[in-house]
Length: 155
Image: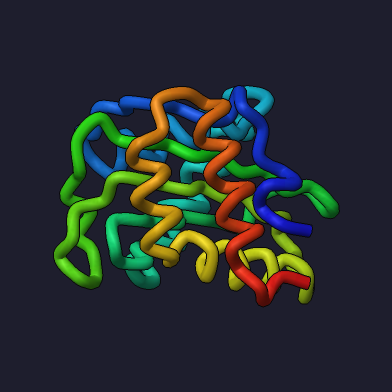
C-alpha cells in the first residue's frame, strides 16, 4: 500500500491559509473524519504525536500523523499552503505542503512501511517543486504519481 492508494481528491486542499498548527490539525481532522467525535480523536492523535517530536521532514514538507482509527482503516489528506508557513521545522525552511495520515490505533509493519515510503517520497526535491506549482487537485495527484514513478525503490 502506498499513500496514493488511500489519497482521495476530496481530501486535498489548495491555498490553505495557515494560522497555527492547532488550526491546521483541526482542518486535517475534519477532512479525515466521518463525524465530530472522530474528528476530535484524530485531532488529539495529531497533537499527541507532535508533542513527541516535530513531524516536519524538512525541505518545506511536514507529515503529521496519529494512531486513532479502527483496525484496517487508514486515511490521508494533502494540504498545500497559500504561503509557506512557520511550522517550527527541523531545517528552518517554512512548510508549503502537509500530508496528514490517520492510522489505526494498532499499527502493523505495513503501516510502518507506508509511513517510511511516504516520508521518502515527499523528501524528493523535484516532487516538492512540482507540488508547489500544482494549481488543481488533479495536478497534485498527477505530480504524486510521477513522484512514485521517479522513485525506483518502491515495492
